Image 1 (cartoon, one colour):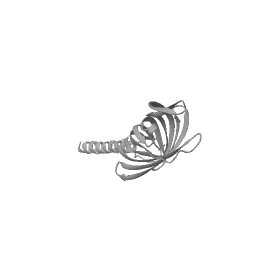
Image 2: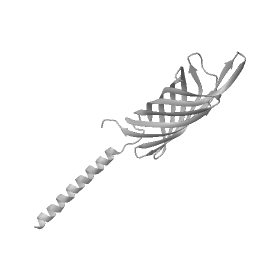
Image 3: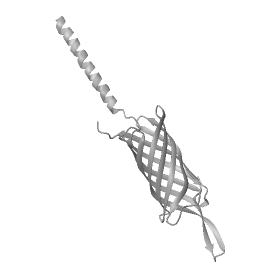
Image 4: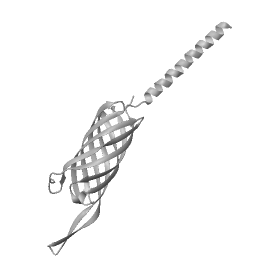
Length: 199
């Protein structure tokens, strides 16, 4: 009888420890470290910006996108872009008189960033990303921007809060390179990430 009790207790401990180990292993597999190779990040952002040109004084931007980590802390991505901007345009009368009036423009485009992450501390990262942005301004005119993104990313479980600035110093059009100027774009982004790497 004692042998049966001891055997039963021993068997119970083995089974319990096996189940506990399996649960811990499953939890470890579910844990995903942000910035590791194979991570895909789905994001969305809203932003408000301004610059030194009167015609582009106020701008509201929105768009979904994704980033894929091709190596640890290195990613490439794609972001759709929808921009609504409010500015002043000039209308000429009789070649010598002009009048400025407000107008709303709609822009569509695609951005392709190449980003680098630098871990500052647990769950906090500095993000540095050169970006090419292709825009059809006012649904008529092509422009290409070389942007530079600096931001801080905070991770909470599988979510990312991205706060930063997008900088630009010039742009390309169908005819020429723009005059030197500076524009900035403050943004707040939210995203989720998961691991696509095959284990």
